[in-house]
Image (cartoon, rainbow, N blue to C red; front, side, top):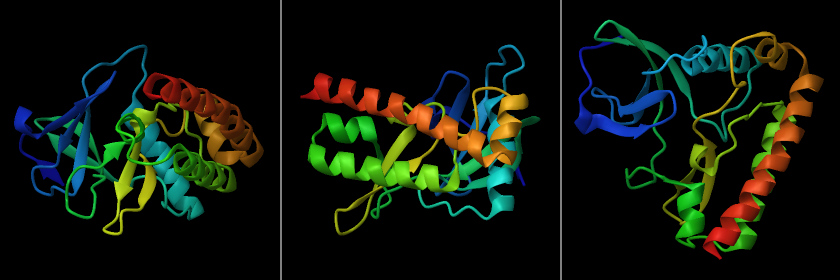
Length: 195
């Protein structure tokens, strides 16, 4: 699949390494395009490899976005993902935004995070960039929220560790549990800043 061009009207976000655009042919998808290559790090390649690993294992995507594979834009490669949208088609809010705007009671935020933790540990899914901006809160028509991770899966850089997360479940589980402490720390900071 090839996309002719992306323009700034379609830009959703800019991360440390990638631009995220609404797909011009399908508003239910986004395209992540790398703009910065530091030290051989490529989050797109790392995530494409990791999603392929999850797919081979038959991991359900209950709390992570679907990766649809590669597309080409103006001679460059972009990685296509599900766009997290609420029931009404609006882009879902991040967990940071939901906490800041007090859209969910703290008790419910903690329950949602416990459910996410259970899911990550059950399937040994490595979530290394545990910013609450990387967790979207997809709202249903009934007003319930489902947490979906949109970025930061599979490791920080290509290499032995990222490969081991795919083939050694106990190693991935260790990383998941270690990272969860950072998520709890992020929650404490977010609650303190938005209390």
